[in-house]
Amino acid sequence: MNRIRLILLFLIFVSNLCAQTNISTPMSFHIEKDVVPPLLRVMPKTQLFVDQNNNGVIDGNEKCAIRFEVANEGVGDGFGCVARMTVTGDTEGLMFKDVPLPAIPHGSKQWIEVPIIANERTQTGEIQFSIVVDEPNGFGTDPITGIIGTHKLRTPYVQVASYKIMGSRVGKLNRREQFKLQVIVQNTDQGTAENVTIGLRLPENVNWLGGTEEHLNVGSLKPNETKTLEYELMANQRAADQIDIQVELSERSGKYAKNADIPLQFGQYIGSSIAMNIERNDAEVEIRKATLISDVDENIPTTNTKNPNTFVLIIANEHYSQVASVPFALNDGNIFREYCIKTLGIGEKHIKYLSDATGNQIKSGVNWLANLTEAFDEPQIIVYYAGHGIPDEANKSAYLLPVDGSGTDVSTGYKLDNLYTTLGKMPASQITVFMDACFSGSKREDGMIASARGVALRVKSGVPQGNMVVFSAAQGDETAYPNREQQHGLFTYYLLKKLQETQGDIALKDLGDYITKQVSQQSLLLNSKKQTPCVTPSVTLGDQWQNWKLK
Image 1 (cartoon, one colour):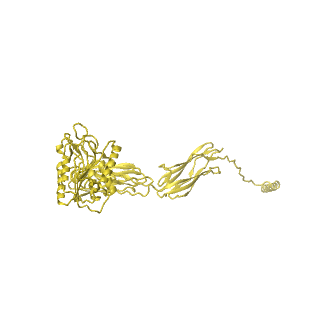
Image 2 (cartoon, one colour; image 1 turned 120 degrees about the vertical axis):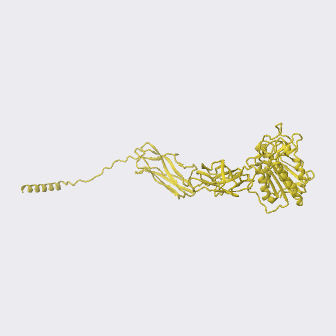
Image 3 (cartoon, helix red, strand yellow; image 1 turned 180 degrees about the vertical axis):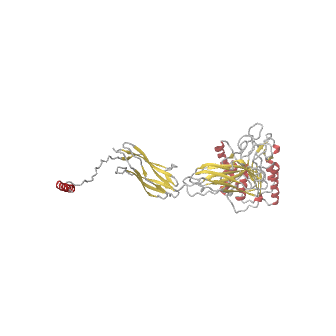
């Protein structure tokens, strides 16, 4: 009991003592530490816009970035820094994000990259941006500002630009006869096509024999880039009259490639090409349509005027059994035939087209003309020949060479004087002859097919008879050259070119002047050799032929 009393008295004493000496209860307190600041600065001339295709624009579906270098010129390290971008303008389809940064020690530099990611919704325009590097205590960088262009998604478009059928010995597409299908595949839009595959789907009873593989991966195709393929094919006896060949195209996305159907008809003339339609809506990269054909093979003028009293014999000899071939002769004959029908208004039944003609076939074609001129009143005649000519070394006479003829035996040829005499006797009001051949013994592509001495001979080119004017591709010992780029004989190309430009409405003198000038100039530029066409009327015509027209 006494002990309890003593404890109570002690507590009262202590309480009175604290009150007298002003001793308070313990207080909480915080001692602030001194800040050692960094000092961040963007290094001059280090700002760089980086884009995948290096065109300086943010394109749709492209990953880009703004890159720059930051230096810490303060006494403290930079902790917790963040690169922040703000953007205004055409921002649809663009994604930005803040970039947390590792510590930037004082006295050091660090490269920083702020990403810009575009998707397929990106529009064409521009953005205005501002980038700062924030530091928690306010010692970040001054802003980097600028403007960057944006562009909508550049997509590829892979399609068949042109195709061509060739290779038949008889100039027509036939069953059980091998032919070649040439195809140009082109990227006709602004984006690069990746993982491009090309497949050939053949109809029943048509077989692949060689050439380009039936299924091929060609990798990437840049805008305007092309890939040329050549397939060797043959149809058997059971093939349908029309065979539809499909070229199947694909690229990585599966969106930007178009298959093409190529319809072929047995009996059709071959050697010319078909251009596919290519439509463009813009032209950042100029798209030039790739083609296997000459500019005179397409856009052939058409007329509603009929030319019912004109008859045409066309002989196009390309493939010879005993001498070298004549490049593009079949294409020459085939396209001249098209101009006769479409531009000059001559009916198809009024045209006899002999491709790779033998000697007997040439004679038969001339007889066909003779019979028609007797049945019609004062008809007009056009004769066109593309092929080899050979000289008689003994008397310098000129001969047409059939495909079964010998380059060293003129008895297998058709004498040019005999042709002109036969034509001149026909009761025709107007006879126009086009000869895309030379008779010096040289070949269209240089070299010799005849002449034991191995040199070109200056020959007599034949004498026109009756109501006849002759357009010859070359004179004397010259060669009639090809235009390889246009896939025609040089003479025939400019003949067709002028018919195209004038829609066939041109006087023969003007036509002859144009052909002579153009061929003479272009042969020197292309071949560094002379080729001088000439126009020779019969002596009985005088100048009256000059105003004749083919139409």
